[in-house]
Image (cartoon, rainbow, N blue to C red; front, side):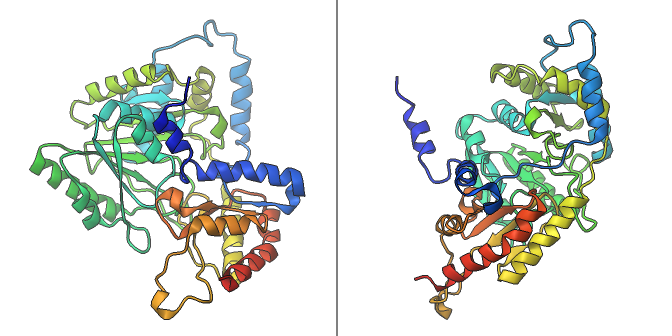
Length: 410
């Protein structure tokens, strides 16, 4: 039995999972050099403990002796859990939803795969602004679709004209992620309204309304007064997927949801398709235990002040060593420009460095970062600051040496 050729090809490609590869290499480096000597900014693994109320809820649910509490339920999840999530999304969107508009999922990744399977026909296209989460291409490809990256503006805000030019009769979905991984960009309400206007114009012209799919696991992690704009009141063909991985620091529990706009035409069919596809993909249902946990604790607030503090610490380090970056408005990443080398002439000032080569160079100094190519943005690299403060403080000398060495290399 041989591995499928197309899977083998993807696995062997540079962008198969640059983040995970760097993370796994980091584990080996820590074993060899000691964890205190390795500066691992590779993976966005939230290091805050869940709130005390959530921990207590976990204990309470674990002690429940309710008959059948570990058995199957309807594939969409427990009605009372779906009702709780409907309340959450209604509060965020300013649009009333009931439990029928919610499908519980195995994390936001499971939710995305479920929606793609439900909506995509072979060769359908999914438009996504770049940079974007590295796994999107794999998720779309899983279901016969094609990911179409579209450039953003210099500040990573949406380039509405570029999206408009990319739309075609094959466009099934426009996928946005705000706050964005890897850039931390939050798309403004004005941008969202302009995007929705373009989608309506396109749909009225060609007879096919693209679905606006919003991936929002970082919604609650925002800085400097920013907030995530609602979409349901602006565009009826919209779906939100999210999870409790980041806002309650429960990434390993794989609990998320799909929320279909109550104004979505034929929403009953869309929801039924998502329920069917979750089952046939093998998820069957979201984990029973953590459905009951989030139903009782979805509105608990986690203190993100340490992320704010670490963001400022890392930006200070980057300023000191002379690395350019996009200031994050949300999430827990800083997206940085690969520095140019000394021997670049004025003619070459727009030259884009090989980010894979640069991240490999950083690794020689025991600094682990994710190359931007995996996020559809060559010439950049991502640093996750959900790491101990000591990692940020102690990396300064190594990062300075790495930048100096890179600058002077041929």
